[in-house]
View (tube, rainbow, N blue to C red):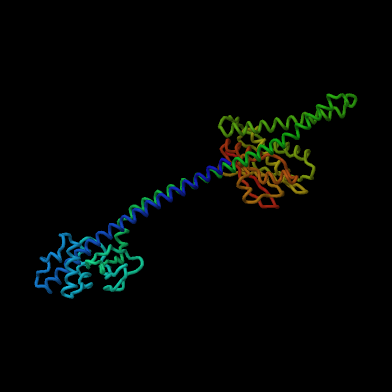
Length: 429
């Protein structure tokens, strides 16, 4: 529940940041486009003034600008409106869009705005009466109309057909910075969600581990309690063979529990670098032969073991390396088919002595091979427990991995589903 809450908070936060950044970028874009439109509109007004002034000088012998009716107040817009109103109403001289476009082209080049424009004559409400070219598109930026009639019946507007070079020049730093910020934020969110997912998986694995550990410890504890109950009841006092049998069961199950606890403690020490190894030259042959005999004695299936030791001695801690080899043999027996075939061999390399344990068992998939050395990662733990397969809580291979790392070596696995598994210990010289 908590992890889902964190996921939702992360996703909502990411959406909020994206929304705010998107709004900021949109407002910046609108601000820049508005600035371009206003600058272009100012140049359009000057272009219209020059066109009107020139035309008025031709048709009125130069006296139009002195007419109060034409000039109105001293603002540029009013002058343009007044002159064009008088020129049209009194002298029947209409504004020339081509001439305005010529002036606009010169003025826009001075202020650095793209000169691909269309000059439009408008009638209310924004109806295009005529225009000087057909290059205007739906992507063009439109300036504010400038009136050329006192009654507002006609106006001139400029369409900027290609404002994008300037937009790109002015907005590219912002977009680049925003992209970098978004990239970093996306990485942080992805890593956070991945961390949360990994924590969920780790929690699930820990639950699996706890379930399997309790399940495995419950059986020997039940045997110990049952044996102690019979011994305490006195029912077997006159049956020494049965009595000895129950003593053996209690002893074996107690040793089994102690071995599990010791393995947990050893792994903990190895993980925290607190275990001190006692390395010395050790003979592998008697150790392996002893482990094989024990495995045969415990097994309920026929076992055929092939041993080929090209290297007889290694430098290692005998206790922990023996336990590591025992785990590999134990796995070969556990995950076997009807007949158990195990091959154990050693050979020499430049830096390591390699010890291989290969079986003809059920094998593993590639996915299972990636997690079998994890502390809680025994392959398909729930499925095997629930379907009556091999029980256990997956400490064995993690123990082997930790022991080999403590020795400065490693353990590798090669396997094929339903065919074989092969573990190789790299023991440093």
